[in-house]
Image (cartoon, rainbow, N blue to C red; front, side, top):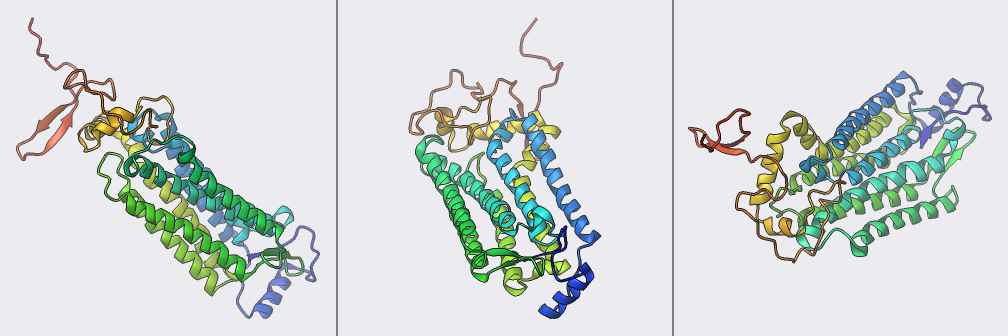
Length: 372
């Protein structure tokens, strides 16, 4: 349910105060009217997305930076767009605005904005997991019908679920009560929708477990560990609120927790994926990229990279899109110290007195081995 209002008052109330008093008697609970606090919630949530947008903008500007390209920017951007629309759907459905005009279309806002793009967001996460699973567990390339089929099927299911719930009577799903000026949802619809979201997160957890033993530069196990922790926390929060306080949009504390909780998780997950390489691309771009490429050369999957990864592509593809079958043997390097991935000067490996090894960039005027 979400609160409240109508541009042209068609209910039995002469004022908003009178309507709230009636609802308090009807539901036997204290109701908080919409005020500046709700406006502040919308502003804070928007600021969160603004920060994430800045990170994404920098990532696209530095999309040729190899550690960033490995994060699959198109898919991460799709997650961001889905997250923004999910947040936009939360605003009316969690009761932060008066349900005037188009905001009174409860079914459309809930089914086609909030729920749909919440599913799209989690589907994008599943696609990220599947791309890694496809390369490192199944030893198959990230292209072709079989690669895209699971994502297409998931999106088709989500679209089908949205169409079915739209076609069902509002009495079975969600509808607008003109007299009370409220959105009303049935328990069955809420339980089914939350159950399907749990299925998505269980798929992500299952695939994360499959990816736990990947030891390479592309190892995102710890990222997915935090992502799953945030996702499960958000799901538990939403389930508890919906089950214990079905009229939560009428209570300021609960609606704030739901909206800002969702906004935080949406943005935190995206920042977990891209924030570190973006920061390093500004702070220590050459050192970090060389260290990253060095790990790429020395990890246990070197042959797979040499044979299959076109890491020099101009456009970011899913995990440096595969060029050939992963079973193709690696080509031998023309010279032992050549860097097959980037045409940049090799960094020197320096070991200090304590035995700590670091990569150092060559000095601009450092002497060479040539004699004059």
